[in-house]
Image 1 (cartoon, rainbow, N blue to C red):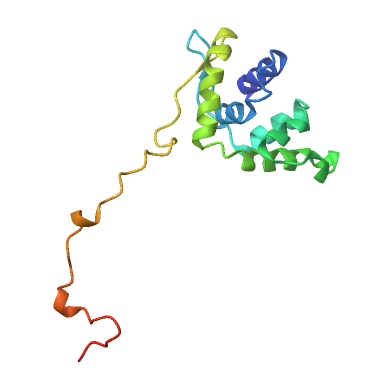
Image 2 (image 1 turned 180 degrees about the vertical axis):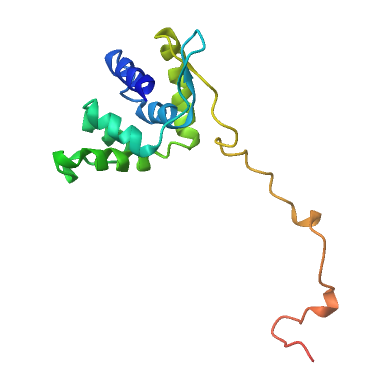
Amino acid sequence: MEGIRDLLEAARTNGLVAGRFRGLLHIAIGRSVTKPDGAKLSAGLTWREVANLLKALRFDPELGRELGADPDTLSPRDRERYWYSVIALARVDSADAVAEAEKLLAPLKDLGYVIAPPPGGIVPPARARPTIAKDKPKTEKPEDKPAPGKKKKK
């Protein structure tokens, strides 16, 4: 957990948080972080651990506004719950979060952090091509269908 603490502090100090907060949460929760020499810093944290870190590091609650949270709705004594709610709103497993995290890879690498690729299946699959009606097999025979306005005889 200390490795992610250092990463969060470094990102905040170097101005990497604003506008890419969802991506930073995605990295802290869902990706492995190592040093360039291979020393493992984190294999990902739980939401609660990240919320506790954000509270302990005194991250600006206004960052939650970029994800739709309102910092004025919770008391200052309840910041861990606030950050937990922000993480829930962030949808850290979404394609947007992955895209923001990808933008952070190079700056974080310059700071001495190597971020692993996202776990398999985290990016939504591409949409399948819709099937065309003529490709569907016919299951009903025309004579089995009642004519419009008439009932089928038994």
